[in-house]
Image (cartoon, rainbow, N blue to C red; front, top):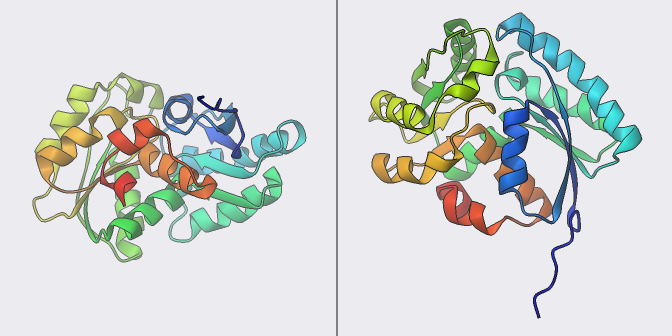
Length: 245
């Protein structure tokens, strides 16, 4: 007899972030991990816009604490959780735990760094949909904490300051851009941004490039699943080397 999978049986994660990223978690997290989510608008894709978003995130986690108490809190935004420089994600985590009333919290940056550690990543190529100034700050972040960033290249959208256009980047465009821009000296390819839908191309990219591929939402799904001690079958089968460690 097949045992029914009970929603939230393993616990609940409350998430704040962009809608595209949160939709990935509904598809790729194990169904026994409950998800409570709230969208967080980004007015402009710039340093100031990302810092402002980081300030507003606490208000939404406080709503979660009142109406949707959870076991784990997660801030789903890559650039928004590293824009303040090394250690910024840890500062956010402490504030998020207090705001959400959870024992633990993570950010996308936290998950990515732990994924790099698990994979032994040291020399990375980074692909993003960000404007140049945000890319420069992301590279500086990883440089300062000891990674060798061989290159960082951004897919140019119709309006680089409007994150809504990131959702229009197709799998084919992201795949071709990554293959073209990965540095042969890199031991890992990182595709940055929770709004960029690329989970479906991870396996194909790893086969083509012969190196691990880490993406923002893949690393997040892996870290959340690890916290609750369970991954979905489709994640284990489709989301690359990170899920096979």
